[in-house]
Image (cartoon, rainbow, N blue to C red; front, top):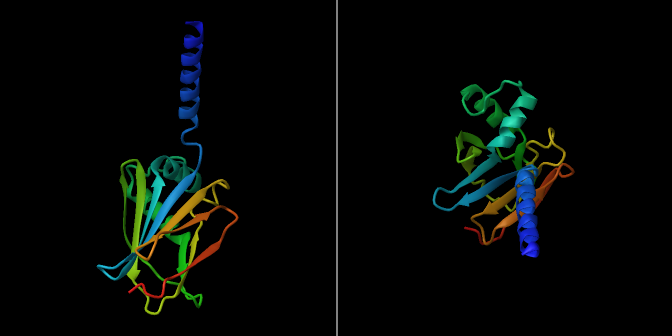
Length: 170
Protein backbone atom coordinates (compact mmCIF):
# COMPACT_ATOMS: atom_id res chain seq x y z
CA UNK A 1 0.00 0.00 0.00
CA UNK A 2 2.87 2.36 0.84
CA UNK A 3 4.37 1.78 -2.62
CA UNK A 4 1.02 2.54 -4.26
CA UNK A 5 0.67 5.81 -2.34
CA UNK A 6 4.25 6.78 -3.22
CA UNK A 7 3.62 5.98 -6.88
CA UNK A 8 0.40 8.02 -6.93
CA UNK A 9 2.14 10.91 -5.18
CA UNK A 10 4.96 10.76 -7.73
CA UNK A 11 2.45 10.83 -10.61
CA UNK A 12 0.62 13.83 -9.09
CA UNK A 13 3.89 15.73 -8.61
CA UNK A 14 4.93 14.93 -12.19
CA UNK A 15 1.59 16.13 -13.56
CA UNK A 16 1.75 19.36 -11.57
CA UNK A 17 5.32 19.96 -12.72
CA UNK A 18 4.41 19.25 -16.34
CA UNK A 19 1.43 21.58 -16.17
CA UNK A 20 3.50 24.43 -14.75
CA UNK A 21 5.99 24.00 -17.61
CA UNK A 22 3.32 23.51 -20.25
CA UNK A 23 3.69 26.91 -21.85
CA UNK A 24 7.31 27.80 -21.25
CA UNK A 25 8.29 27.23 -24.89
CA UNK A 26 7.68 30.26 -27.09
CA UNK A 27 6.38 29.05 -30.45
CA UNK A 28 4.29 30.33 -33.35
CA UNK A 29 2.95 28.57 -36.41
CA UNK A 30 2.39 29.80 -39.95
CA UNK A 31 0.90 28.11 -42.98
CA UNK A 32 1.63 29.21 -46.52
CA UNK A 33 -1.04 27.69 -48.73
CA UNK A 34 -0.92 27.42 -52.49
CA UNK A 35 -4.71 27.55 -52.83
CA UNK A 36 -5.64 25.69 -56.00
CA UNK A 37 -9.26 26.86 -55.86
CA UNK A 38 -8.53 30.62 -55.69
CA UNK A 39 -5.06 30.51 -57.29
CA UNK A 40 -3.86 32.63 -54.36
CA UNK A 41 -0.86 32.29 -52.12
CA UNK A 42 -2.26 32.55 -48.59
CA UNK A 43 -0.41 32.99 -45.31
CA UNK A 44 -1.98 32.32 -41.92
CA UNK A 45 -0.02 33.07 -38.75
CA UNK A 46 -1.06 31.70 -35.36
CA UNK A 47 0.33 32.94 -32.04
CA UNK A 48 -0.60 31.82 -28.56
CA UNK A 49 -2.73 34.64 -27.18
CA UNK A 50 -0.69 34.58 -23.97
CA UNK A 51 2.53 35.14 -25.97
CA UNK A 52 0.92 37.91 -28.03
CA UNK A 53 -0.27 39.55 -24.83
CA UNK A 54 3.20 39.45 -23.24
CA UNK A 55 4.74 40.68 -26.49
CA UNK A 56 2.52 43.77 -26.77
CA UNK A 57 3.29 44.66 -23.17
CA UNK A 58 6.98 44.44 -24.01
CA UNK A 59 6.81 46.18 -27.42
CA UNK A 60 4.17 48.85 -26.98
CA UNK A 61 3.03 49.52 -23.43
CA UNK A 62 2.54 47.60 -20.19
CA UNK A 63 -1.17 48.49 -20.41
CA UNK A 64 -1.59 47.33 -24.04
CA UNK A 65 -4.66 45.11 -24.42
CA UNK A 66 -4.56 42.67 -27.33
CA UNK A 67 -7.85 41.13 -26.23
CA UNK A 68 -9.99 44.25 -26.01
CA UNK A 69 -8.21 46.93 -28.02
CA UNK A 70 -8.59 47.06 -31.80
CA UNK A 71 -5.64 49.47 -31.93
CA UNK A 72 -3.35 47.00 -30.12
CA UNK A 73 -4.53 44.14 -32.32
CA UNK A 74 -3.77 46.21 -35.44
CA UNK A 75 -0.32 47.14 -34.14
CA UNK A 76 0.51 43.51 -33.35
CA UNK A 77 -0.76 42.35 -36.76
CA UNK A 78 1.40 45.03 -38.42
CA UNK A 79 4.38 43.81 -36.40
CA UNK A 80 3.78 40.19 -37.51
CA UNK A 81 3.49 41.26 -41.15
CA UNK A 82 6.71 43.28 -40.92
CA UNK A 83 8.59 40.23 -39.60
CA UNK A 84 7.34 37.77 -42.22
CA UNK A 85 8.69 37.97 -45.77
CA UNK A 86 8.57 35.98 -48.98
CA UNK A 87 10.80 36.25 -52.05
CA UNK A 88 10.83 34.47 -55.39
CA UNK A 89 13.75 32.56 -56.92
CA UNK A 90 15.37 35.81 -58.13
CA UNK A 91 15.13 37.42 -54.69
CA UNK A 92 12.23 39.69 -55.64
CA UNK A 93 9.85 40.38 -52.72
CA UNK A 94 6.41 38.80 -52.91
CA UNK A 95 4.04 41.36 -51.46
CA UNK A 96 1.12 40.02 -49.45
CA UNK A 97 -2.11 41.90 -48.77
CA UNK A 98 -3.49 41.86 -45.25
CA UNK A 99 -6.83 40.07 -45.15
CA UNK A 100 -7.40 40.49 -41.42
CA UNK A 101 -6.64 39.33 -37.90
CA UNK A 102 -8.56 38.02 -34.91
CA UNK A 103 -8.47 36.54 -31.42
CA UNK A 104 -10.00 33.09 -31.51
CA UNK A 105 -9.70 29.98 -29.38
CA UNK A 106 -6.77 31.18 -27.28
CA UNK A 107 -4.78 32.29 -30.33
CA UNK A 108 -4.14 35.51 -32.21
CA UNK A 109 -4.43 34.95 -35.97
CA UNK A 110 -3.12 37.09 -38.85
CA UNK A 111 -4.24 36.44 -42.45
CA UNK A 112 -2.50 37.51 -45.69
CA UNK A 113 -2.80 36.65 -49.39
CA UNK A 114 -1.69 37.51 -52.90
CA UNK A 115 -2.23 35.99 -56.35
CA UNK A 116 0.26 33.18 -56.95
CA UNK A 117 3.26 34.64 -58.78
CA UNK A 118 3.67 33.33 -62.33
CA UNK A 119 6.76 31.23 -62.97
CA UNK A 120 7.54 30.72 -59.28
CA UNK A 121 10.09 27.91 -58.95
CA UNK A 122 11.58 28.64 -55.54
CA UNK A 123 10.16 30.30 -52.44
CA UNK A 124 12.41 32.07 -49.92
CA UNK A 125 10.80 32.53 -46.51
CA UNK A 126 11.69 34.58 -43.46
CA UNK A 127 9.66 34.38 -40.23
CA UNK A 128 11.23 36.31 -37.36
CA UNK A 129 8.16 37.37 -35.39
CA UNK A 130 8.83 37.62 -31.64
CA UNK A 131 12.47 36.57 -32.03
CA UNK A 132 13.57 40.14 -31.30
CA UNK A 133 11.78 39.85 -27.95
CA UNK A 134 12.59 36.25 -26.97
CA UNK A 135 15.74 34.61 -28.28
CA UNK A 136 14.17 31.20 -27.59
CA UNK A 137 11.18 31.95 -29.86
CA UNK A 138 10.61 29.08 -32.30
CA UNK A 139 8.58 29.68 -35.48
CA UNK A 140 7.31 26.84 -37.64
CA UNK A 141 6.21 27.51 -41.22
CA UNK A 142 4.39 24.81 -43.17
CA UNK A 143 4.02 25.19 -46.93
CA UNK A 144 0.92 23.35 -48.15
CA UNK A 145 -1.04 22.81 -51.34
CA UNK A 146 1.87 21.33 -53.26
CA UNK A 147 2.96 17.72 -53.79
CA UNK A 148 3.66 17.40 -50.04
CA UNK A 149 3.81 19.55 -46.92
CA UNK A 150 7.12 21.33 -46.46
CA UNK A 151 7.97 22.27 -42.89
CA UNK A 152 10.57 24.89 -41.96
CA UNK A 153 11.72 25.66 -38.43
CA UNK A 154 13.04 29.12 -37.60
CA UNK A 155 15.09 29.95 -34.52
CA UNK A 156 16.61 33.32 -33.68
CA UNK A 157 19.75 32.22 -35.57
CA UNK A 158 17.84 31.73 -38.84
CA UNK A 159 16.97 34.33 -41.41
CA UNK A 160 15.95 33.01 -44.83
CA UNK A 161 15.05 29.43 -45.66
CA UNK A 162 13.97 28.14 -49.06
CA UNK A 163 11.97 25.43 -50.73
CA UNK A 164 12.12 24.42 -54.37
CA UNK A 165 8.63 24.08 -55.78
CA UNK A 166 7.65 20.95 -57.71
CA UNK A 167 7.64 21.48 -61.47
CA UNK A 168 4.20 19.94 -61.95
CA UNK A 169 2.35 21.98 -59.32
CA UNK A 170 -0.32 23.37 -61.69
